[in-house]
Length: 131
Image 1 (tube, rainbow, N blue to C red):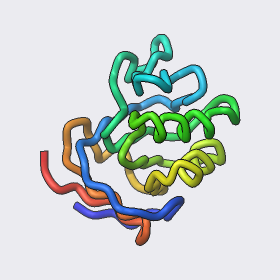
Image 2: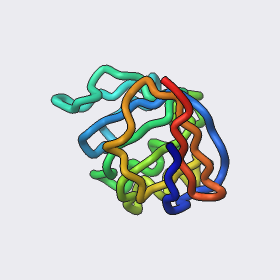
Image 3: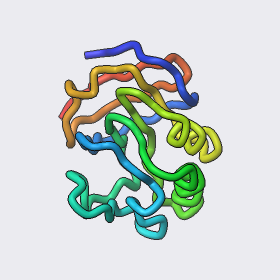
């Protein structure tokens, strides 16, 4: 399956999907040293986002979340790419400054953790490969 979405930030990545159903606040919700989701009660609590194609509906929380994504990238703990149903400014700016491919406006409910996903931020395309 292949979906045409909206390009937020370019680049290409292929990796295993980590899919959440709740919005993510990177500031306070993700540990920037480990890449672990630490927000209590979040459906991804305890999961590592590093090296994954992170899929979630939308971001939330403080604008410092953008800098947390940047910090995650420089610590080697950032996701390979981000897919949102609707990307808001905090996540968009974070992806831009951290150079993380990002696409939104795709049916994220069709994606599941463990699937192998291609994100082409240059074309705004998300493609399910296997898994």
